[in-house]
Image 1 (spheres, rainbow over the protein chains, first blue to last red):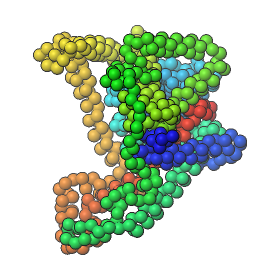
Image 2 (spheres, rainbow over the protein chains, first blue to last red):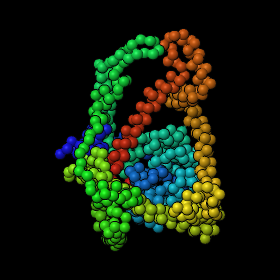
Image 3 (tube, each protein chain N blue to C red):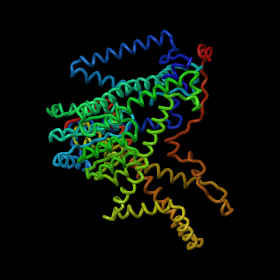
Image 4 (tube, chains in turn orange, green):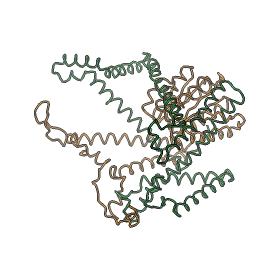
Length: 310
Length: 302
């Protein structure tokens, strides 16, 4: 086998490190899912934002006003949208028990279809299908600000008592949060976009930060698979932390041990500069994670048909 | 997919235009799709889950393989793979536009369902004369007119005559209609919604920065420093004063406003954001794995 075949185009920059690392993370997740399935009691810390869900629905029930949910602006059904819908399934289940109206606004048609099926199933499982209004799950628009305007209008017209913004949010995050705040709705929010999290923190009552969003369904439902997966995520984070520490130490060693003379223009003298400043590829951790394989020339036979069509 | 299909170099996934292989593929795909659709419709509920699980696994396995399996290095269109590893790698790479296209086609059907939902809600509201039904009329008129003018404009721009429409003098009714609806109204309303954020930032910042606790005070102080560092005149006066007072003392130069703000960004902001990004990334990986292996039970019981 040629070296080029074994390495592959996509490994030129990351080598095998990326795949190996992913494989370790996947094994952590699967091992812990198995542990949880075998009945091992796994601990999950308290998350205030998730405890607030019950409080928010209770408040909406007391006020007799709807609960509004938005599963973000995912362009398609992806892990983030599915996770958001999982949390909304829990919210809808509680709302169904208390006969509380719900509104679930979707930005993407595929997410809308999935959400409608899931929410209908939830009502069916609760034996309350007669309470399910198919129009409560609705597609609003797949243009960002048209969606923002549509949802804001709904919040104001329906005077929602509780709002849940969970998923991928961008610039419209603050429009939603401030509109809901203006009518005094209790808000639980989370954005997987780190740039929008500060806006939610400023405007919402409870915010799930970072991976708390992914911990939500495990925390709420306590399904063994989800709890095991959550513990696997914690193991993965410990590995990442260990790598950061390891990388810091090795980078420091490389930086201090390898120095070179460089001309200092400001002071007009030669001074010691670490080699890493001149060439980032010199550090050990850089070479491990991003080996930058040299360009390879591979001799291949020509395709006569393609040659003729060229 | 279109680009691949139009290319003259055939591969397993992209047969030449109008070739027998392409038609066989299209008809075969159609038959499989219809059979799967009918099968899922009439299948008892308990058998549906394994079919969905199988399809999810196959769909996910493609992306996993595409990520892991070595793709041929610098393989040109006129070259043939050298061995089985390169052949499989090429096969997977060639399939990419087709798989993306299948996903796009399914999504297009979903869009139809989305529009059906919109029509259902708003037609019901209009027929029952519910509160604010006039807005529903506006929405439906906008939907129909934008679709009509958008599509008619697109059609008019196809073919060799289409380039003439780059000049406004050659425009017809549909082109003016699309321009008015899309550039004249929709884009402007989008911009108006976006600009509203500026006012919301102010009101949210006011609430967030009120001094209520130690944390809020720290937040206020750091935010104030960063905001001031971005104000040219303030930064100029502050930095100038520090440089004057420092009088060549390198340590005191660290107290320049831009240095403090830079330190806050590099030390606290970047590290916090990276921490969050690691958590989100691992969470997404776990979620993706659970969906791929059908370990996730969507809508799980409370």
